[in-house]
Length: 103
Image (cartoon, rainbow, N blue to C red; front, side):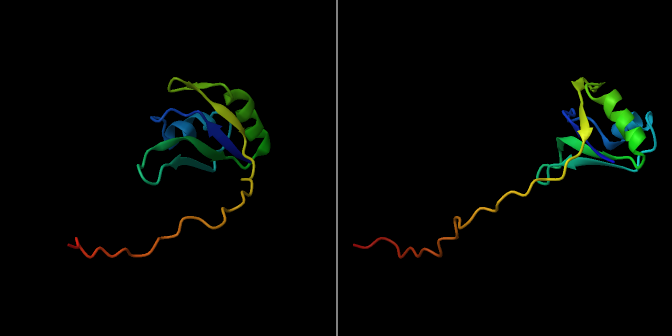
């Protein structure tokens, strides 16, 4: 079962989450979401555990649990909703030629 873990402090690491969730069973994967431009944490992660009973126990125990000064939000991850793609848009505007000042 894949779980969403939110309200993470920006100092929290994948190892912190691995250690925390392993108290409730076998962790298959921890994926801390990072900002692609800054390389810093986005404040949420996904944790996967194969055993759904262990995962449900982790959700029950860790939702509201404090980690690095923040109360975690832990629940079963839901599939991302399809969002309609924006139509049209800016476009480039082409090249503008500047010929200089005319007298």
